[in-house]
Length: 356
Image (cartoon, rainbow, N blue to C red; front, top):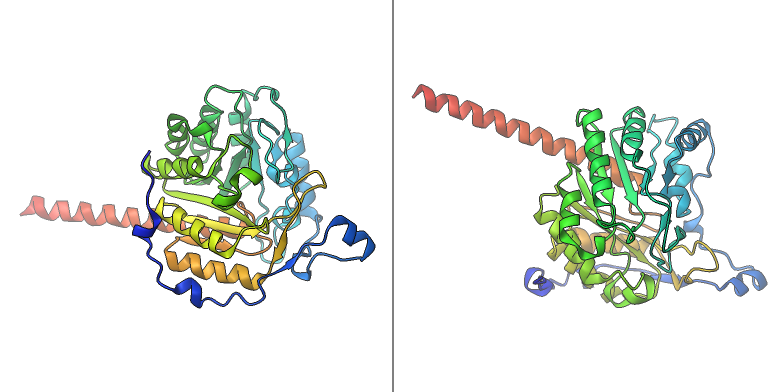
């Protein structure tokens, strides 16, 4: 595939040099330093909301009853309490990201806490119907389906994902917006297209880190250019919105991040999220540094200047962060409204022509 040259599409305009990064980061203490010197994570990384409350308990119980896995629990997301608990005062709904194709991945990325195996259990053939029925009853307007990588399946689970999306769209009469956060399908574009044309509203695939750190952070079967190909092909196949995510604090430079954003935008990525990498266990790769909120804000300004539709950037932001979901839901509704208005205008114009 021919790759887009980012320089010809986004010439440097000096914007990023004008952005004030302030204090960029603090060095992450090693486990030994944490014990001996009692060093702690920065204040800005403390959990805003601990798991608990009526909504949290209700959603967790429902998920267990249906035997549904969530990336929130499997990947030990720091926002679990905030997302599952919602906001009782403002009636903000609780949200969860449903994991399809089981809870065991065939790949072993060094940052990820999800279980791994070369031969995970086969997917539940009833899952698309079961998940769609459950989600359609929750009374939510936006849902994220994510998946483990399934290199052991012929189409890497693309048909399973597409069926889940179509079933939910049918049961909800198209009222629920669907984001699918998927793998790279081993670069098989026919499988990418299956999902991109399933009726979803957002096609998401994470590049995870900058180009220079791909081999260090991700499984050897994943790669920078392969992920870019997936995102671009999804957009070219008709996905309304494409989305990706980058973790910071892994040893990347500022130039690495800005260059990555340029290339992503040049490959038609609409939405990008940037968040702090948090080491899930001692078995995973260590954190190199904790990037400050001011630096995340600076990256957001850089990305917005490049023309991304939406940018979520902050230490606690994750690819399925709920604030992004609410924006996406509203944006998609606006797009539908504009399409409906355009049809009305076209119909009226046609009637005038007939009269003449």
